[in-house]
Image (tube, rainbow, N blue to C red; front, side, top):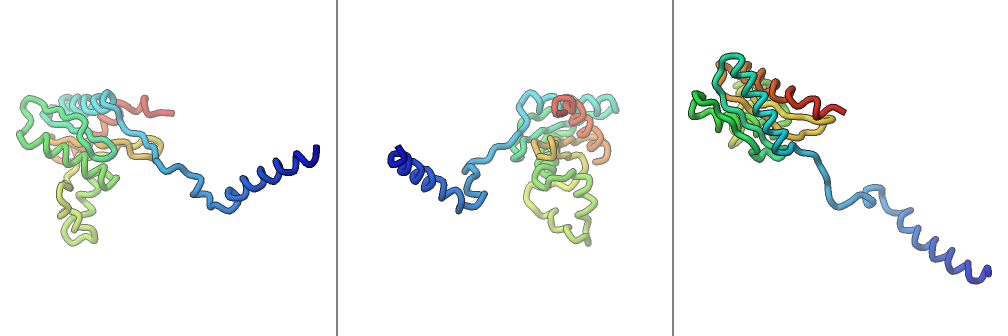
Length: 171
């Protein structure tokens, strides 16, 4: 009986040896997973932001991008300026790309500031109104608003859009 059990034990020990010598990282998978907004939730963000601006008396455009900066939703109010959809998209993209709101980026990148060169990055727009959307500390998308009188008011509307989905993102 012992003679038959010894080869099994030796084989089991041999198979477990590689795991003892491999670093912890080798046990990880070759793929990554992440969370991103679905279309319905992105639409709720856009509608919430648009409503907040309408309630304030502003005609705006709202854009929502996924965590990679890819456009998901654009809404433009009837009398919002022709430039506002693209401006909103660029604000949302910038917020996702830099993982910070564009109001802060606008201030941090003023001429003479250490990071003023980021204003030269193609596609980036350092005007208030772009806000990253976070879930449990992870970036899941971004929202941009354009058309209110001033980036600070665009920012308020963008944050109202995010607030419209907070209950869905709560644990």
